[in-house]
Amino acid sequence: MLVCTIESSCDETSVAIIEDGRHVRSVAVASQIPIHRRYGGVVPEIASRNHIRDIHTVLDDALAEAGVELADVDGFGVTAGPGLVGSLLVGIETAKALAYVAGKPCVGLNHIEGHLTAVMLELDGEPSPEFPFIGMVASGGHSDIYWVEGFGEYTSLGRTRDDAAGEAFDKVAKMLGLPYPGGIEIDQLARSGDPAAIDFPRPMWTRKNLDMSFAGLKTSVRTHLKTHGVPEGQALSDLCASFQQAVVDVLVMKTFAAVTKKQAKRVVLSGGVACNSVLRAAMRAEGERRGVRIHIAPPWLCTDNAAMLGPIAHHYLAQGAEASFEGFDIKANGNMPLGQSARPDSKGPHR
Ligand code: KG4
Ligand code: ZN
Image (tube, rainbow, N blue to C red):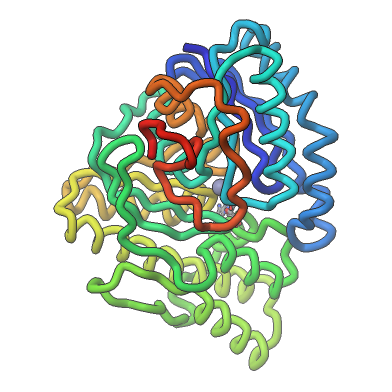
């Protein structure tokens, strides 16, 4: 089955062609990062306008790279939420229109579910994880821990109570005068820094509760900057490394507290923050120490893109979601339950 997936929940316009839910025939991404950088973050109205401008080119690129035409596609999957309303609307209306014209089914998908299952794609040299696994999604909008027993079978074990991990990276970077998105900038500066230079707090440092909090850590950085000023040179690298280490310590500790709770054998780390070099290394090291298999997608698949929707789009379409372009709508806020992404008002198997 050939599926066309569309992702436009934030500031990346992306279309992918996925075969049998595993093989990435193509993925095209138009990133708006350079546009939003001058505002220090994503401006929703500008994001929607640029999605409208880019979506057709991105679709054409994805089809051309895969060497297929629209008529060859067996179904469509599109992010229906969570995300920015105007941005989601562009992807959803495009997918519905394409499905209508092609006379093929279309399913609305949960973005987080996409991040969680992206590693089910065929990736060079990396075997896909078997279910069940602990899934940690750390992105700009989410820091969530799930017990994943299958496609559509997710139990929430913990989440951030305030800022997401990526949001903390972005806000701290902004305080330091670094460009958006801040995660990658901090990651790079931290490479020459001392992670023990400043003892920032590790909020909610308990294995009993799997919720997280990053707002207090961000405030600690702000307080530090008020006292010491914004550092430069080596001191800037030291601050970046120290802040990053605090976030990494929390994410790793909470993930493995979840592993212990569920006696899990596998962990999947995903979302934009999973690009972080220190987090990737720390997760792998802890996994090795405890005999737990760690699956982390390559960085291009961790940040927002349409290929990550391939496995869930295939799953829901293969389960028989009928032509449903009228049956689902935008779920902009976080209250879109995982595993109920497609046609929440239908009697589909994914209810
Ligand atoms: O998953 P994603 O592309 O978008 C959301 O769904 O939010 O994640 C974007 C987030 C941003 O906050 C960005 O700063 C962060 O991922 N990020 C990183 C790194 N690369 C991207 N955070 C830490 N280290 C990185 N290398
Ligand atoms: Zn994302």
